[in-house]
Length: 395
Ligand SMILES: Nc1ncnc2c1ncn2[C@@H]1O[C@H](COP(=O)(O)OP(=O)(O)OP(=O)(O)O)[C@@H](O)[C@H]1O
Ligand SMILES: [Mg+2]
Image (cartoon, rainbow, N blue to C red):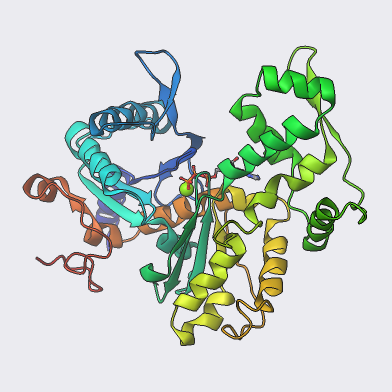
């Protein structure tokens, strides 16, 4: 190759517009460019509503038109405030949950093609692309984000959809629990104040992230026993935490609230489900020969899985559940192993999308604006007429 050809090749690479990668979560949106190791921004999924002047969540909608408008407004923030690129004729990778309602993915596709005139859109399932960051074909992927904990096992790069599990046990549930604990456990004068003027959601979230932790299983069991049986003494609680609220106002976060906030994720609900039972139930629904490798390849993603102590508690819970009558005769597993992804858990799925966006797969799996103008629909990932191994679109 002579130097002139190399120069032109290089120019081509430079002039090729970088692929945009977006993961719009219920709480936070991760946004950046393919081939990069981290998103350019992680911002709340909300925008300032022009009519009310108040902040509005992207997924706060009643009709399709409202959702369309929300995506348009939020797209402006992403493209023009954070990424600083023109969206026209650009390729985009959207990282989405396989359980997303069709209304949301169809409306997003409509906004991206008709309003922003992107050249192609590739919607990739978050659980599956998260494995690209590890280069393993099989893992049990549990996403504990804001609204829901969603688990989908992936075997040989194929999501095992019938084994999926979803529960409303994630960041929002922990915050609600923490709010209740604070209202009942703070000092009396502070309780009165908290009831009269509830803390803003962002403050509760900050207390949760910086002040709370997931306790060990034996301590949790001792606390539960002491609640049921007053003669049993509870373990010594961790220290209280003074928390400034701005101005001269502050509250003291009781040690017990700090320790108990995350317990809601592990308590069995009315259907005897928790995030630990989700893992065992999903493994039970998978073929026998995949169970050991799934148990030894657990990947936790989503911001809530970054909570201090969550992985080791989940490990203890799983081993403890294995010997209960519910599972002892059905599952012959000995250990559970967790992966350490090469990114913070809250943007592992984004990183998977960014890796995929930098490969040729994006050309094979994208829907172009031309395709979309003929059939205005984004095919499901599970649609074999579109998503076949050789990457050729059929039908
Ligand atoms: N270091 C941390 N420790 C504990 N929780 C955290 C931490 N960082 C973020 N979170 C929590 O993670 C949640 C957001 O996670 P994530 O960004 O994965 O959610 P999302 O993708 O917006 O939601 P969903 O996947 O449900 O649509 C928030 O509730 C946030 O408070
Ligand atoms: Mg998410």
